[in-house]
Amino acid sequence: MKKDKNIELVIVDITKENLDINDLYNNLPNEIKKKVDKYHIEEKRNLSIIGWSIVNNRLNFMKNEVLENEFGKPYTKNKYFSISHSNNLVGVLFSEYECGLDIEQVSLRSIKLATKILTDEELKEYEKNPDILIAKWTKIEAYCKGIGTGFRFSLVKELPKDINTNKIFDNQKNEYYYSIWVNKKD
Image (cartoon, rainbow, N blue to C red; front, side, top):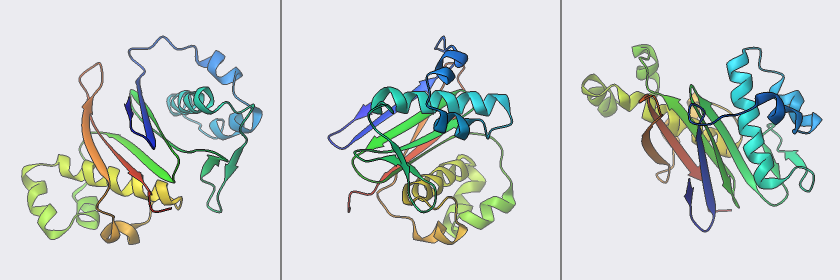
């Protein structure tokens, strides 16, 4: 968990935790249950339940109504948050400002995708270090989630410089990148 005055990052490795998914689900408000029920793949649904449970534990949905911006990005009156999950990790970023988080497990990705999101200089680096693609992808996703629009290829070249990207490992030694962006300009 990372904290500073304006942000808190919680990352949970589900292989380390003994979580009762049914209990977590049952403690969520009906409006949130509708969101997680949209996942048709059980693993993704379970990761979403864990993410929303982290948010509920910090923000208490009984006291703080979940609102949505014009693009459907959730927040509460007093706090912004962003949920992300990949394989064994679930993360939530909390902030006083609009924010975005993305976590992705390192895996092989298509060169076609690389040519769409990497600069010419990054493509040269990609040949030596394919992880650069995942790192860049998490930056794009974190920013797009932060502004609330969802992924937009048009934003790839306009990324702010203040996106923070890190590499982490889960309990099973799988490698991930995560990126966070906080709009401290609000």
